[in-house]
Image (spheres, one colour):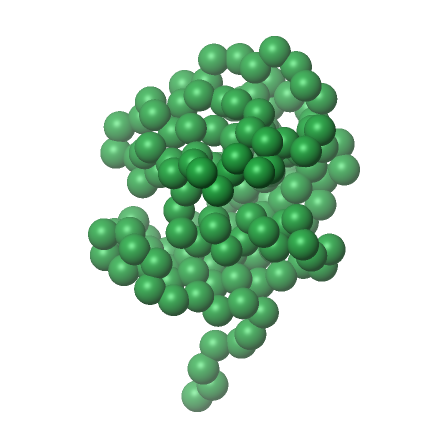
Length: 157
């Protein structure tokens, strides 16, 4: 199982988001997502997310908070465990990003964007809950969301 991080950086009722348009063989191609990436060997999730944000946006963040653990079941790409964060960030000139286009997106416009269906479940949780949640997202081959489990243990036995 891959280990990854994902962060939604907030500034003035907007999230900094990445429109994934530049990488070949990208499971996120065409989607809008937060910033993040894969953990390196001997790297904590917090070290990973800070490094990824520096690399992708040239930004230092404040008030980093673990908000959720996401378990992605992805038959086409391999399963993934993601540490989901929020943080605050200053509005700086956004650099060119070799993975896509960075943009500050107002909260109310985010549902209009091409997102993963699972993101439509957890993004409202970031705005509506203060606790750390666990969300399992089960995708079918081809990328359609089949089911999800929020804050519950899997089947016993």
